[in-house]
Image (cartoon, rainbow, N blue to C red; front, side, top):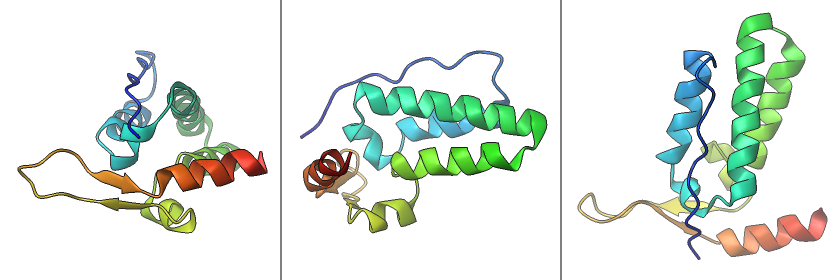
Amino acid sequence: MSINVSQPRIRSDIDPRAKRWYRSLKRSGQAEFYADSDWQTALVAAEVLDRFFATSRATLLAEFNRMCAALLVTEGDRRRARLELEREAPEEEAPVATEIDEYRRRRRGSG
């Protein structure tokens, strides 16, 4: 099930490193399945990362990492959620996620 939701714009005054992280999500395999609420969470995570770069407060980095885990940003996060992204041949379309519906059902059931 693919959800066609566009990535919200990030503020222009955000640290360039946080902008690159946020923009990289659009090219990631799991982004195909992001709902509007996922993109809003990613936007807040980018702002948290921006504040971390400005202050170096460890609590902000911990919060950013927690938000990334919720968004299944890293391979490790996806493995823990039993979500596998399969890359198709280069001439074909973007990666396809398997078991995403099952993951979302489990996530909704626990929240």
